[in-house]
Image 1 (cartoon, rainbow, N blue to C red):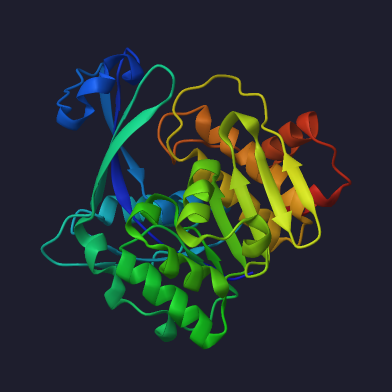
Image 2: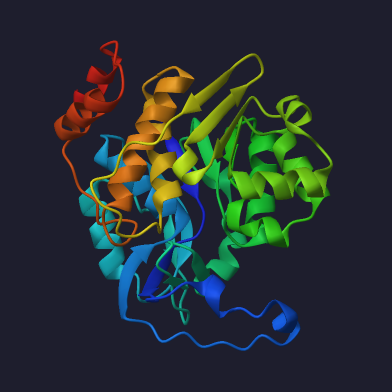
Length: 318
């Protein structure tokens, strides 16, 4: 299956705070909040939603394409992705700009405070899916500049290309009518449970109404697993026990990458979700969203330690 991912490409600056954010807030002074957190560590990692998803897909044997605008500082990152098996030919360098940057501080409960600088991502809407040849089988419309997300979803509808709508971090920038319009033509909606609540609030649609417009809805719930909803079924996906918890950054993207690798092999929805669940825990066990590594044989063996497998997972080994 030819899968094309659009979305942010960024360098992640990840920091750790040795306490709990919740202990630092004064409820009666929130309107004048002014806090500075002294962190214990900082590292720069390769990130961004589109390449994070693509990286996990490549680990599982897929060859996804990423379409995005990046900065002049991207060449080392490009070499890494190409070596991993990700096609970067549609990742366009914008002269005079840096690649987008994500700054995240994580406390001892894995809560995060973050900021995002768009950099070259801010001009992503100058690209067009209508110029991509051959036409992809599925396009992922993930967090990007709002203009680009709107354009790419519209182009998918115009060209009758199946697409997955993943507004996540940009939900705060999108209004209900915009999300309703772009869900209307989508095959998939991927969100976490908090984001799902925001979509319900902004659009006025409940789950039943959303499923009248989107074929498959996937809601992730952190430690509580995930649920895959279709028009006639609901599949609960449990989490996989972690060997250690290191960093939650990119875990949701790894879940998406695993799910899409299963979808590309024609797996049923529950199995797609279980592949996503295991892919997510590998990411959780490493620092940064693209530092987890495994062979496909190791992945399949660990899967069988945690889930039942009818033998269909052998397709990942080919």
